[in-house]
Image (cartoon, rainbow over all chains, first blue to last red):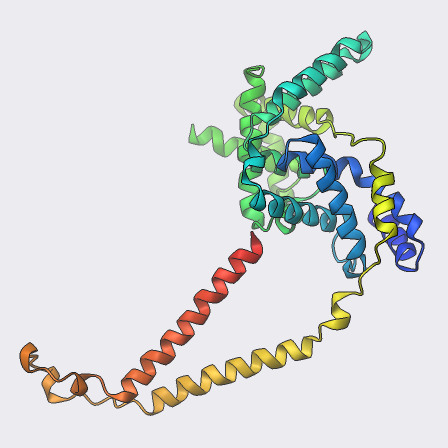
Length: 187
Length: 164
């Protein structure tokens, strides 16, 4: 993950009219944004459109980013509002769980991987399936914490929850994950 | 059970680096000397490591970056909100609203007749005169208080909506 200073340099370039520099931020954060969007809308096609929307909105509002928080925190706040706004309009979107598809993809990757990487792949698959068994809120908070590299306070800013509330949810999510992993995942 | 929860909460804080230096030393000692703490610590460390290192990020399609850049080629960066929102105007409006609320409340309180009429001591429902109990000053005060409460509720509702 790019550091804050590096992001600020790129942002300044974009604001000075070097639009192409924005591609650096897109490349840097697309995986995190896309993964986080998938935690709200588990449909890859819709998630990709929403993730694109997030980057377009961020570009339009880039002058509002003052650097008081990390760029990633600001970006994930846009992810949160964009996804919640989408879900409000299409409440049935939350039902579109692609668990079987995800397992098929994981199976394929597992089968095609050389033996040296098999253990890591199996672990990733296990975590991926376990994450799908968590409540959406908990999976999002875990994603932000571990993948998005956000602190408890920053997750509070992104989700609109208090830091203590985030801490409790993070604790519960990890306890559940621990339970699921201990049972070796009911797949 | 509660004791286990308490141990695990403290251990998560320790693993995340959220506890105070004094707590960190105390917990480190407990892990080194107490078997229960050690076992919990090992389990949680495994979960932490598995989650931190094995959570995969999803890759969007190869055209993702190009699609975004194509879309923004037609867009422009909007001017910063602070340039067109003058905070002094917002503060002025807030001051005016507070002044109006304060003056209505003050007027109502100043003009309230606090004396209690005799009829309130023995209430005879069929012969009760509402005007004796509720004079205009009393009404004004009630309305002012209700307006303030209404604004507080409206503010809470709007803040709640903005947050969601």
